[in-house]
Image 1 (cartoon, rainbow, N blue to C red):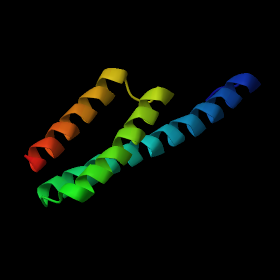
Image 2: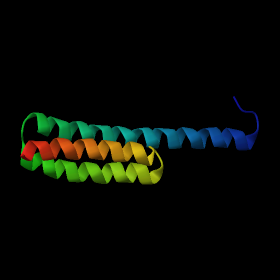
Image 3: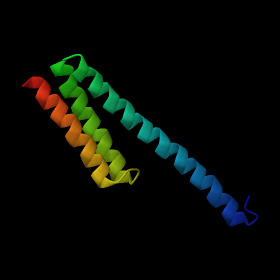
Length: 88
């Protein structure tokens, strides 16, 4: 454990940030699973609406720097392909 006052504060700050980032990342993953669930059920309308919300969440997580830009793009591309193949 840190002994210096500023280091102790930095540890607390990092813990808060880590827990917030973890929550946002978890929310993103849940949204992705929701879209995949609709794709499995062949529910085109709900899949498209859920896809739009999920893309917003992925973009927000990328913007905050929680995941890398390429990682976010990869998730979005895979989901879009799944939903487009569902409608075809």
